[in-house]
Image 1: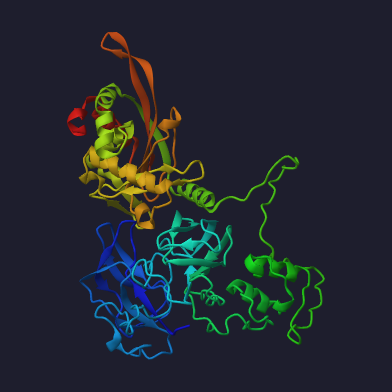
Image 2: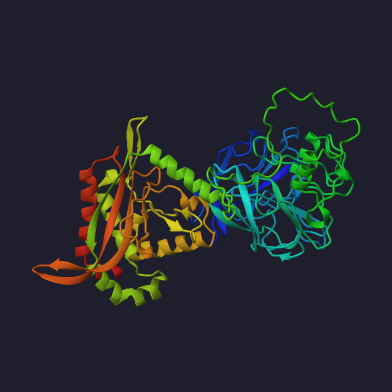
Length: 568
């Protein structure tokens, strides 16, 4: 493998095609650790601080601050710590200005230099032009992407392609679940899926090679070394020796071993040549090594240390087999099924418990007569759907009324830090909307600057974000920065719900089911659509009077405003 890597303009959104590199946060010659902030990018969708995908030294900046370049353009060159910063694998005169690509040989295509890029949140889809196939015999490692600033690992939940399948750039390749988001990961290359290195259901660190893509029939070598302690992928052995070198363990020439398999084999002095692989094409999997370890499999000659005498009281040792769900106390009926919780369910559970522990939560509610809203819905819903693509449900009306109420009661649109003895009042509304993922979990995409949108804009944005969430297209940026959240169990015919606050918000609004009921209209009785709107708030931030007045503001807007004018 090369001792230099190229960092490319990342793809920060489904439809983003270019980005402006606004600021470099490191200088040429600076040492860089994996995940260090490297530069800032501005696109038409988001502004982001991009972390480095590698350890090393910043050897060269190829695109100056202030430049706007296409996604995938090479921006900088990072070299290993022992390589001279100014040195390049090829003469710099061979590069096309501002791209870092080499000039093609006569009659041949222009090919990007450097190692294949990491595939993740801080890397673009490729350092090649979009849609360009790998050169003859070239094989690319596909790595576990970084789907959030604090995400360190991901669970590969589903493979969407099989070994041998033809893959085009941007084809959905696999699905990943992290504690932040579930995402469908596209392929950064054209080619053939040559090998799957990480099986569905496995959880691996960011940067771990999960598959290889190349030309049909291309020879494949073992993946680069596993991520270092800091999470960066360190350079592995060259392709000519990667399949035969395993430190401390005897390897069989020609067998492909993942970093985890190599590490487990080395730590336990296993003779890889004596193992039978159960993976694709006879590949040795982690489970094969763990089975051999548990069964006292063959060790390398002279490498195994003398067994230590058994202690009088055996100490518990880390499990070497895949974890199995424990059976809850009291469950003994053989008809019961014990299943492993998904990463999303665990993340939701942890978040809910943490929120309850952090906030002094109180619930209050008001009843709303939706007759004024219903008349506008019935009259305009077909046209509204045709013009905006969004359904004219009760949620856009409630959202718009809530935004106005947040302006009137700024403490409800705040965050609080008791330790610092401060409250931060947000002069904008970033509206979080809770989205159910077919009963498999919950995410909260954010309508940024919702107070700058009319009701049509709010409805359209909610529909787009909800669709992206259910289609596993949300990015980490789509779920950051909420100042207030709405959850909407109303379509499930709920009556009055008490949700848990979405931290660091100080309140959450709940819109429950709307049902036709008898109401008093003057001295008469009429049948109107009515429903409960509830607010759970953090009593540390404000009191019951503010909560009640906030809800009354929303109720009065829904019952009295000229919504026909706003629907447009």
